[in-house]
Image (cartoon, rainbow, N blue to C red; front, side):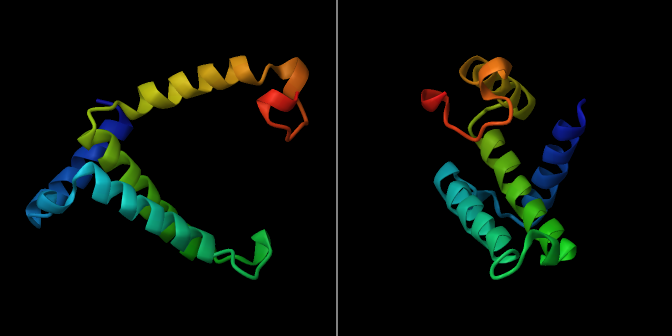
Length: 109
């Protein structure tokens, strides 16, 4: 079992012990993910990246990842598989010889 799968199983056990599955449909998990992402952004509000609290970043990033993992699980998606597929797709959209050192979108390079 991969580390990601183990984390997902821990999240599910935590959720199920509290009878929260009833609230964890894909739509509500996506909403929660968006809210937690905004809370992560809040850690950087009015600060440079260096000034942002590492503890706050860790806390909010953990929430973002937890909801993303739960959402993938509810949709029957394998996190490692979908991220690997996205990396492969992006490697075609952003070939090294054209994209290296550039922040331009794929249709601008």
